[in-house]
Length: 489
Image 1 (cartoon, one colour):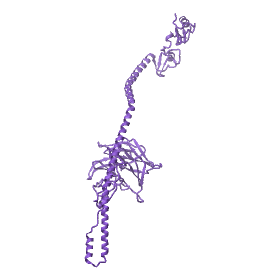
Image 2 (cartoon, helix red, strand yellow):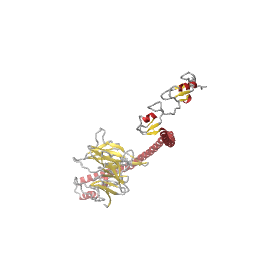
Image 3 (cartoon, one colour):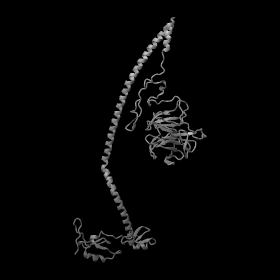
Image 4 (tube, one colour):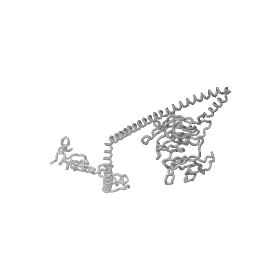
């Protein structure tokens, strides 16, 4: 008796021949069949025969039908075309191709599937802990960043307290200095007033005695004038000025600074050369003194007779020099040559960076370093631009002058060659430089550049501060340096 087959809506699926409940299905013909009609259907002759299966397994067909002959199952595999084929295809369309047994090919493919699936499952096992780790990080993301914000806030409050305490200290120092110096100045004012009164009185007597015939009175006035000495020393008063100061290990510019107290009343005439705003005792010399002489041994160039192109001083007071040869030379301050390093370029620019000497190689378009192992290594290369002037910065970056054709700019790099900043145009988008070739950083972060026949200064953001063209018609400057007080030499 036929088994009733129902759809999801509980309708009985019927035989296509007699409308009785279905039991079987012919895959070749696509016909539903009951038990009695199966024999009737099998007696029907077809080109590709019949494939009778139970109706419940009609969709479980695991056979592979040929694409060219849909009524035929595949029995071989064409390696040339990379497709399964039937027997008809083997002897006709794929006769000259490389043919494999389909069963063997399926086994090979299944082995490959197993291998690759195992690899994928192994990868999944590696991904799972990464997923767990990422999930944990994601869940703690807000907490972490809020903690960082709180830390910054606390740090800011601490700095604010340090700043306010330092401001109060400076205010108190100013008040103390004002009180002290006011007393000194009041006393000095009184002394000067008394001096003037005394001088006026002497002048009055000297004027009157000129018509006197009394020799004794004349001698008295003369002795009085002989005994009265004039001062050769006067106080040089300067108001306090602000410079940088160090608060909690960090330099804070502009807003804070040490206060230079007014010099004491006993200041000699020589001390008028002190620079306001510098440490008391530091001064500019009227005549420079020579402390060391180093004969570098560089020959004169053919073009302009230059011998020495650049210098850099080490922490242990040695001097790196470069000139009109393919060499870097290291001297001590007694003039003894300590080391010679061959380089590819002539007249390179050098500076000290992380206690190592680095230099710009114009021909190789690279920034290089002579390291502790006695080798010249390339820090990074520069594409399309030629490097010249170079200097290290207080922040640990490297500033380099670059030129190409008729353009010039200053670029700030990290020690790995990452571009951090480019300085090329002013606020009107006009070029700042024509031929930037020597560079220094000032103590306040200003970037000072020698450019052809002028000096161009920008702040650390690249905003132009000034351009100096010299005081004369021809301004011919070869090098520039800055001191600890920010003076440009």
